[in-house]
Length: 150
Image (tube, rainbow, N blue to C red; front, side, top):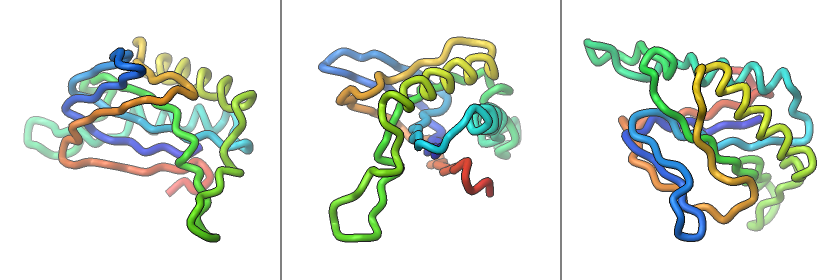
């Protein structure tokens, strides 16, 4: 599982001209799921994202988490995070999970994130052509891969 986590002042997801998700201060998470991902990947990554201390405290030091700030989150499925670009100029997505595996994993990830945060989270729509807008705050952007826990 691979995630691009962006601290945002605002973010939204629009599908066919309809805004389906919108937040102010919080996180926009782009989530890539691969065939080898498991429930353990979900548990580890949701806990890491919910507790990642990337929000400023009273002194402006990044010392607070999404849980601490009661911020909001949008989770967007993005298979292109698993693009293999070693050969040629056309990316291969062979490592990205097929929908029969990815959809249940995506839904489980959302549910686990809601459990971590104690509230409903907003999402894009799996497989849809989405327009994602954001105002990156900082900018703060972090990439996490559950297969390479650094």
